[in-house]
Amino acid sequence: MNFNEENFKSKAEKEISRCRPGDWNHACRVVWWVKELGKDGKDLPLLISAAYIHDIGWRDVLSSDKKITFDELLKFEKQANDNSEKFTSAFLESLEYSPDDIETVNRLIRAADEHASNTDDEAVIVDVDNLSKLTIDHLKEKYQPSEWMRMHGVFSEMFPTRVKTEVGKSRFPSLLNDLKISIEKEFAAKEKL
Image (cartoon, rainbow, N blue to C red):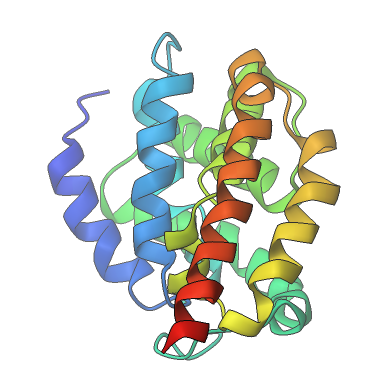
């Protein structure tokens, strides 16, 4: 596979910009994490492809300019997940990906959508999707401030059973703690205003 990441990235941004607020920045953080956790994998270009477009199912489901709540996420998640394979397949076909590569990217995105992995490459995509959410930027870009502590609680409860790679397991606790500190600082700064 001859993978041109810059070309892929520019085309993917047009699709993902039609998703929820913050999805494109999230996708870029996921790619960064893929390059950290998946750098030794034989299918790194396919992992990067999946990372850029793993939220493509959210295209046109919600307004791309209104921050959401966790309840809205839950309400529309099945619809978005149901869209993933057809949107992914059409996008990758337009870029002349082989049927085998399209199936691999769809498999990786399904793993991210289901938050569950059965193979090493699926473990990487699930972990990087989760780890990339553990920043204040992610919360600021996607969620209403009233949801930030709730999301921290969701991450605290759900992520420990999702994260499977050794790097993910070792980085998760400190990232989660740093996120809590960042949220508290944001709220303290708002109280001073």
